[in-house]
Image 1 (cartoon, rainbow, N blue to C red):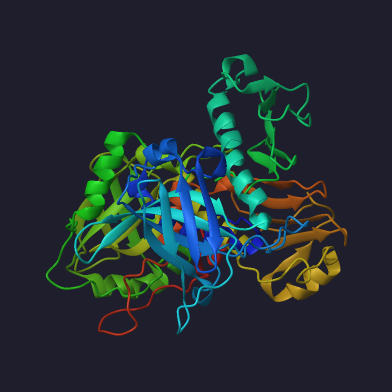
Image 2: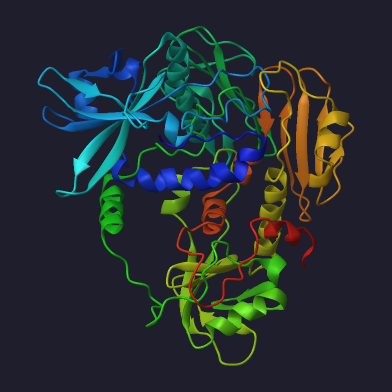
Length: 533
């Protein structure tokens, strides 16, 4: 099942990593619109068979025709909680492997694919399912396929509303992104057909249209679902948004179009076996899943095109294991802040540079000359294996501190409400449950929080908040004001660079056996950076 952003309390960095995986999986589908019942793709389940019907227009959009294979990956929809800061929605449709239901079928001449479902059980009996992701399957060779996500369809009445909202909500995000320019938000009259001006940010537009309000600095976009629910995304200023469709709006644009020529090049790159620019004759001795960070003693400096990474403290052992090896130092520029960052755009316009150098026999540092550009956050790579990360400029060091704070924000395991609960636990209950995790009480939803601690607040009913403050002064927060809206700046905090560094924390290339150094930092080591220089 395709990864979906959850953005509930403790899911933030997990979401970032799974979103990157999803983005990589979507490379072959770049430029494809994700369809649903309102755009020509519907499905009906009868027992263990699902009939997926495509209109001629949907077949063309999905680049499908008779004889092509489609795959289904189906799941059960979790009930929507009235509380915005609970994990009910973050128990997303993927579920566990034992809950997976899937199958393949061939598109017929009538545009219908008859798909036989299977389940991940000894007898392959499929289980319950509310929605299915529809994928176009490409047979690369006799033994390999790749899949392209092309549609999402409901199988039960309970899922119809959720799929409808997942179709409509991304249009709100794209409208706000399109409306915002260097001079502020543009008036509704410049945004084309289907958009009507609203008198206030809380106004309701006519059915079938997108309502838009702006004062030039702030903005709101709203529409009505087929069930009559008002869907909204509002820019409150200071990179804070309020929305009731955070998951549904595809906040980082995973499914946004990529130019056809770029998509073709990416597909080619994915299928081409890369060669490491720093390849050595032997495998990297660094085997940890977790690259070293400033908390482990990693220090970086970028001066012009010259980048130096020092391994001090606990990190010195790793440098000794790497002596004589060629490594790459790559430095990335921090993306410009945005209320609704586009990962596609950030990835296509990423700036930075890299250079290859040999780890010296003596000393504590590796220095390279960057080619192609320069950057703020630097990584040390040995044969595609991430060894270390650190900020190389003042901006990069502050960014790494923010990432550390984001890790602290995400480190908790305290539920804000009992399973199925209709009210939040009190502030005192939350602090007591999270005391070992550094939870402290805030005076209100926007109350002060000591650096390195996690601030929580609740009214014991329908309002609650959680926040953490970085040494850089950046306050990250998630708030349920009790009006059905999720107020947060976490979306703007996470960028494609965040994903790159976070994904590097579990790059999947390490093993628990073998010779050499395996002294990576623990998964929580970033939190120590809150106190590092």
